[in-house]
Image (cartoon, rainbow, N blue to C red; front, top):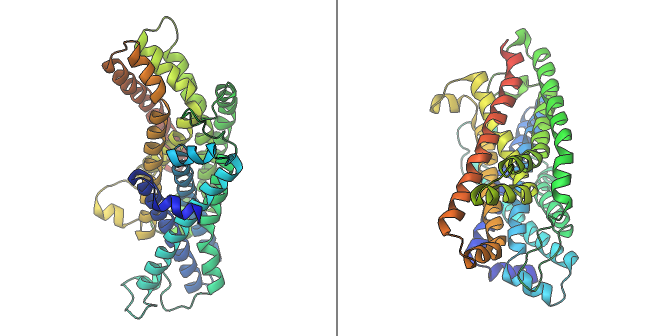
Length: 393
């Protein structure tokens, strides 16, 4: 009940974040139900159905990350600080945030089920063209399976939110949000960098090996047809994504250290110190963005072309999944950047109070953006090139 009251009285920014979480949950729920419909319509293709569910894990992970980012942003708002001052400890605040996340995801899942049934023609209206192949129209679906799939997103998002906020110190009465980035943050980011590189290399090797051995004639699988994609290729790309998410905080910290090396001026010092202090927070969303960019570059290298015809060749469900991942990752980066800006408000006010020009702070923000673009772009290009080189040779 308290979560519903807080949701009803939240500010427009918080309502927008929760609406985005509900929309992401609806998209993932629709993809999961579509996989179930295709599996029910083609019971002999168990392998293709398993691959479709594996591909749904990528949008699911992006939606869960968005939900966690939105919950972290809500965690530092004024109502949460008042609850912390009233005696709500970190565990109760984390449970409250998880409850709000579950409610948003359940609403999104209900909307996904309604649209799915409407498109299949199960609500009295005729099914849309192509629903027999894409959604399994005309084939009855087991209700327990539908209910189980619709609970995947709320359960995963709620558990991830509770865990992320339970491990994060609560806000103080002075307005500090409790970033949780203590002295161990930079050390852990640098220590995770070799593991991230190793996971990325292992994923590239696995994807190259299964990609060579999978399709007949050594040709890459056709877009829009998941039947020809080996499960090992999906696992390889998943390892690459996990490796990039693990490695990017360390790369962010190293970029900040190099930027502030030598005898830096005020501009390089501000930008470099911020990248070092916020490596954990901004590095992980940038890692997901890097993985998405690498996947898009790899798809362009494998299949080529652009425009509506090329997009249509991938099939509506693949296009929906890709668009969902890109939207969730972009929103996560934006929410994280805004949260970081809000938590730096005290430091910014102190710098302005001692006479730092506003133009200097703006140039520092622009310099950080340029530096991280210079890191993400070549890493994405290198991963995409290494992933597709064995398939094109």
